Length: 153
Image (cartoon, rainbow, N blue to C red):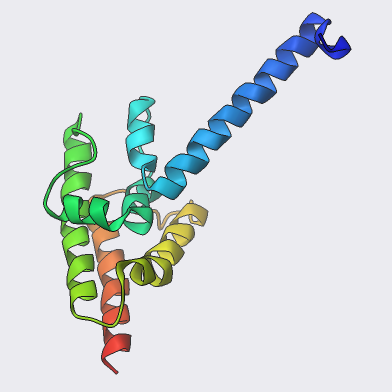
């Protein structure tokens, strides 16, 4: 056994660091997989507004198509979650319409439109925070429309 682990406090600190590292890895995995909202709900936390956008910004084409077809990644446990999933289903359909119109792949649309918006929302903890699904829908539609117009030129 390592000498520093012989002291009870040292063992506790080591365990806390390991646990914190495991939490960080799980959160990074969830972020990159587009499952932040699902993971927050599983932990009994209310997902933040950007957690919901995370699925659209990082989800695979299969995940986005499933969401557009109202096949949800998790069963909503509250009316609030159901409203968010309805908003995401609508936005997933809009994203696929933009992709279907040509000029952009889903990955390009995510990279150029949704990831930058997601990062803005992560950093924007002030009064502009969309607390309702409709507010996020409007912001995403604004960005999708701008991306469509740029591709039409």
